[in-house]
Amino acid sequence: MTTCPHPERSGPAGLLYAVRHGQSTGNAAFAAAEIDGTTVIPSDDMAISLTDLGERQAAAVGRWLAALAEDEAPDMVWCSPYLRAGQTWQVAERELGAAGRPLPCHRVDGRLRDRDRGRLKHLHPAVVRERFPGEPAKEARDTLRYRPPGGESFLDVAGRLRGVLADIEADHRHRRVLIVAHDAVVLFFRQILERLTDADILAIAGNGLAGNGSITTWRRAPDGYRLLAYDDRSHLPG
Image (cartoon, rainbow, N blue to C red; front, side, top):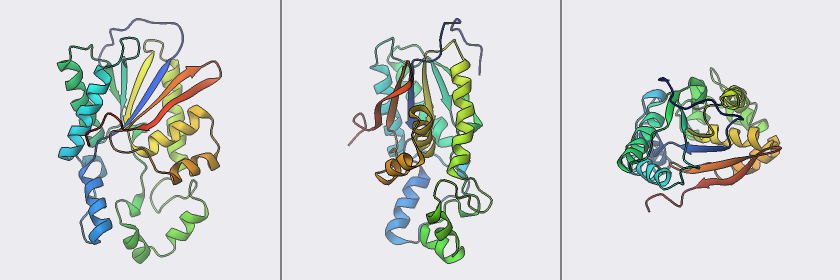
């Protein structure tokens, strides 16, 4: 992170925003595989880029941010190291600049990376059943604690996010923080910030994860954080 111009202030962040990256080539390939079962899904998770639609979604996020009141606009961005997340912020930042809005400070943090599914990474479920026939049943028995071969569990993701939140809370320069990352990151920030149970999280996931380019917002309250919006897509192109 470059030198930050914001002065020390009293108290931790008052607003938190979490954006899931725009549609990626991996998302598009996986959706195609759902239809034809043959599409090759990119294997290098960190290097997967945005599609044209993903760039339009990122631009829509930027315009949404540019329309916020000055006392609600992010003054700090924490970004996943993955290319698709970085590109999402770059496009959104251009929209902010074009609107003449001040640009927030920015840092990339490896703890905001997507969940690592190890040897199952980017494999279609049908392929997993064929190559690793015992794994789907293991995952079904304990979804949150299941750790794929060479990968990490959802609770591993939550563990590293607690460290991110502790650092955000300890930062008294920034009051409004934007996180640009992945659907699993958004989901488990919900668990941490809202003090949700594992059953709560499974229910939320069962109803659908945060979509590409969606925005989730929390406001700090005396007893923690209160959810204002989850998976808001109203700003996105049709």
